[in-house]
Image 1 (cartoon, rainbow, N blue to C red):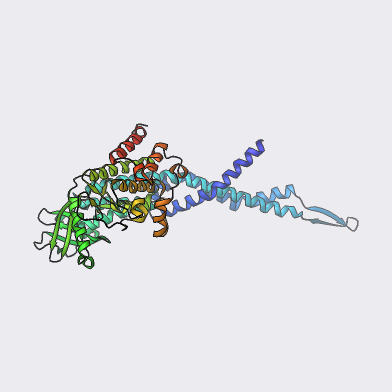
Image 2: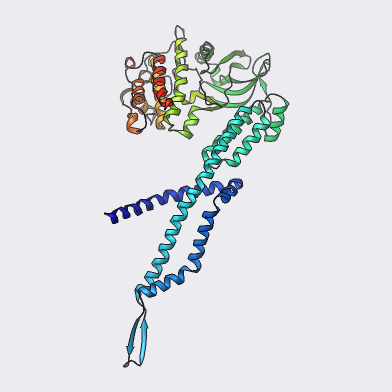
Length: 480
């Protein structure tokens, strides 16, 4: 029994070695690009390094002789006499050389395994401390970005020297990119201009989008079927803005131009911290534009691509304000009809804001949807939308359920070609969350299942009810 336990222990240890080796290799590679971290690790781990160096020296200089002596003792040469004892020969035991080689191999294998484990354990505290420092510097840099961009840049550069890991490096790069984009609009005066010079940003030529020259657009932030979004500036109020332009190729289409104006009207009716605010609508000689609140950060889609699946508590922390914001839109008579991660923006504080009401439906609006037309994004589309039927607030609930599902599992429930996804939205049942993740509470899995009911009548009555359900789930977890 004891032999069996020992064998199991050894086998388990050997199975962990590949993972430990991969972790150690990646950690050493991360340190190689950060001299300050490398020096810190060497200073804190010198006893381990010294011991491994001594064992290596022992293996190179003393072990061969000791192993050969032990092999000779275990398997000595066989003496033979010839010609009545006049001639004596010794014939080496073939097991002697095998034993010698085996002892060397065992020593070096055990030493390599021990080195991997010891190095991995000595690296983790250094890397963990570096990540904490980098995250603290990131938080400070975010807070100072608009008030003191030069200091923010210095903190970001310092954080990059501690970013010994892909996730932290990407976060630092994102913040540096945000600072670059903000500075590219001219920032808030001479301090921003100085920081722009330090970071190597060329402030682009701005172009007015309205006849009075109040709003100027600079660099492009993104584009989609219903518009191109630029970073810009309100010169009258001296504040950064986002400017969404209807592409010239679609501006001539009366239906799309009216839908663009409807988007502005719909979003302008909403005043909620979880919804991107509309400041103005401009119709000028150069085209139609919506002037919006500028959210410096990234889309939820991009965040999920790098961080999904999310921890349950983190997913709840994002889901609750999103549910509140959707409920506020519904209370104002607006159905989004294209709710998805790409239309959720995360600010530097990770507070989510719903954007892009380009397909929104306003209660009482004369802008009708043609029956049988399919509007929205297939992966997040409700069954009724996929079937070409009219959508109401419960369609947004379904899309919200898919977004929460995506947060928790790393992907929406239905994937594939567009026709296949639309068919699945109508007929297929998603895999239960509890089958994919054992740490998802049953109450949360049940809530998502209700949101994803094929029959709209089987979903919740209002987003307020959804919000309350999510709060009830989150509250005891926060207390723990």
